[in-house]
Length: 119
Image 1 (cartoon, rainbow, N blue to C red):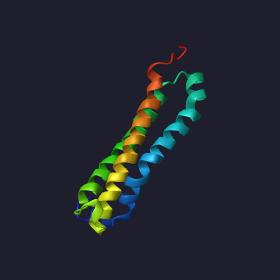
Image 2 (image 1 turned 90 degrees about the horizontal axis):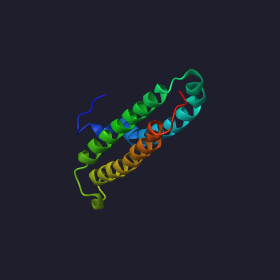
Image 3 (image 1 turned 45 degrees about the horizontal axis):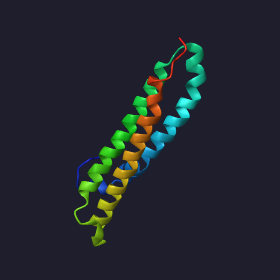
Image 4 (image 1 turned 90 degrees about the vertical axis):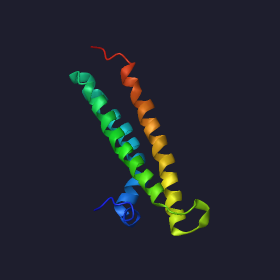
C-alpha cells in the first residue's frame, strides 16, 4: 500500500480510513473511558485515561492527515463534477468531520485534568 499522492484515491482502504477513522476514534474514546472508569478508580490507575485520550487522538490525527492528502489529490474545483472535484469534495468533508471529532475528543478528554481522583 503506497501513499503516493497520485495513487492515493485509488486505494479504497485509505479513503475509508480518512472517512471513518475520526468517528471511530471518538466512539472508541467514549466507550473505552466509560469501560475503564471503575477499574481505574479501584486500582488507582488514572493514567489509563491519558493513554486512551492519546491513542484516540493519534487515530483521529492520522485520519485528518489522510483527509488533507485526499483534498490535495483532487485536481479540479468541487463544483466541476469531475472525478477530481469529487475527490476534493470528499477530502473537504473528511477534514470537517475529522476536525470536529478531534475537538470532541480533546474537550471530552480534558475533564481528567479537572476532576479530583480521590487519591
